[in-house]
Figure 1 (tube, chains in turn yellow, blue):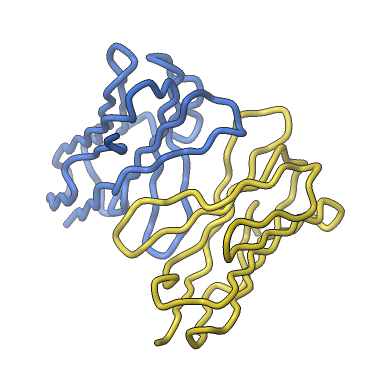
Figure 2 (cartoon, rainbow over the protein chains, first blue to last red; figure 1 turned 180 degrees about the horizontal axis):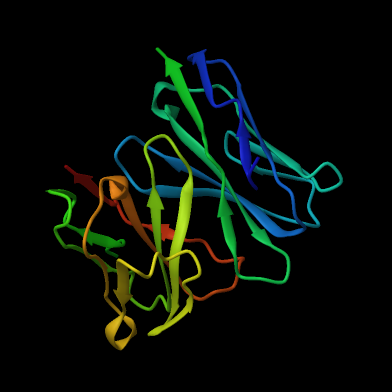
Length: 111
Length: 115
């Protein structure tokens, strides 16, 4: 498996429900970022969590980081149809400028 | 403020033909990245520039791929000759500098189809 694997690969929920996506990684990291990609578009940065942080909020987004388990989760509360997109985690390996993107979770929010 | 601009948005070519992609990063951004994204997959870093210097090109297939960033602003990525397996979306991103705390801003990508 590769650094930055998201789980599940695909998720389909009803509007108003919460969506949870997970990311696992292998190395020590400086920080972990979550990005969103709408179909046919570039990636948009959502949130960054540093290696010494455990939880971070931004609007309807909540990110947790567990460095002991080398995992992170992204929670989107009260989902909307507009949240339909692919979500990627990106880790930066400690001591480097190297970014590693995961394979993404495809989220579909049904109206 | 304009975001990262890429052109063309779509390109269809026959195998063995050359192809070039262009990227204009956000003004003032010193760091520029080229990524390749295969269908339904994550991003693979091809090359990273600090100003005009390529500081990480370890993943760039140098037998057929080349890149340049003249004057540390715009960048071009070239494939010559293209192969069927090169079909993918090529994404350009920029950030203020290489600090990993910095957000990367992505362009819309160039979708390449090699027939």
